[in-house]
Length: 256
Length: 65
Image (cartoon, each protein chain N blue to C red):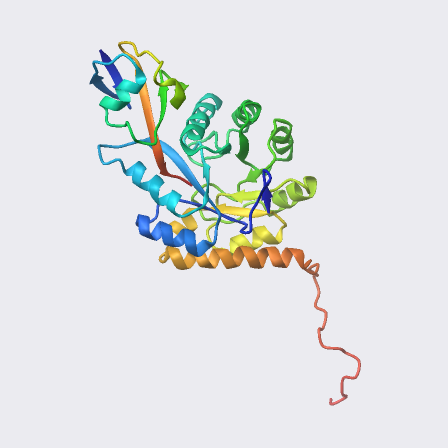
C-alpha cells in the first residue's frame, strides 16, 4: 500500500489511545505489525510531563506517526492544530478531523474541505476523516488530498460498517485513490469485511485498546486485514439466491 | 506580567516566548506553541515578544486515535 509516496507493507494503521498501560500499547503496536501509529496533541497536565514519556515510547517503536486534529470543531482550529503537530512531530502527514456533531463525532465535511485545501496548499499531506459521501470525496481530492479516510461507523462505537453500499460505491468511483476505513471497526470480522470491499487499509484504535487482551487482539486484526485483502485480490464469487450443488450431479447413483 | 498558560494565570517576568518556556520548565521538551490562538513555530520563539494578558497554549505529544 502506498500513501503519499510512502510504501507500507502493513495495511493496518493503529491508534495509540485508551490502552491499559504504555507497555501494553507498545506490545500491541508490535503485535499488530503496523508501520503507522496515530498520535495527538494536548495540554500537558501537571508537572509530570507524561507527554514527553509518551513521545519517547512512540519513537522507540520505530513507526511512522500520523498526528491527528482530534477535538477540533472548526477549520481554523484544525489548521492551527495541524501546524502545531508538524512543529513537534516533524511530518507533513496529518489526519484531519473537523468534528461537526458531538454525539456521533460525525465530520463537518464543509469545514473539512476548507481545512484540507488550506493545509494541502501549505505542503501538508492530508488524511481526511470523512464520510462515504462521493461528492465530498471529490471535493477533498480537488482540495489536494491523495488519500481518503471514510468512516465505517461513529468513532469508538465498534459497530462495523454502517454503509457497506456507500463504501463500495466510493471504491468503484475512485479506483485509484487509497481508501482507509477509519473509525467504527469493533471486531476483526469488520476489518475483513472492509478489506473484502477493496479498501486499501483500516485505521482503528478502540477495538484493540479496549479488548480484554489488547496485544492478542492487535495480532488478530493484523491477520484479519491480511485475510480480507487476500480475499479481495482472489476475487470472491458472486452470491446467489438459490442453492447450486457443489458435488457433481452427473453420475449420481439411483438408490431410491 | 500576567500570561494565561494553558488556561491558568501565571505571573512571568519575561519578555519573549522562549524565555517563558524556559521559566515554565519546557526548555528541553517537545512542545508546540500558540499565542492568542495563533501558531508560533519553534524557530520564532526567540523573537516573539509577549504582552500582558496574552494567552499561551503549550501542547505536547499525547495518545490519539
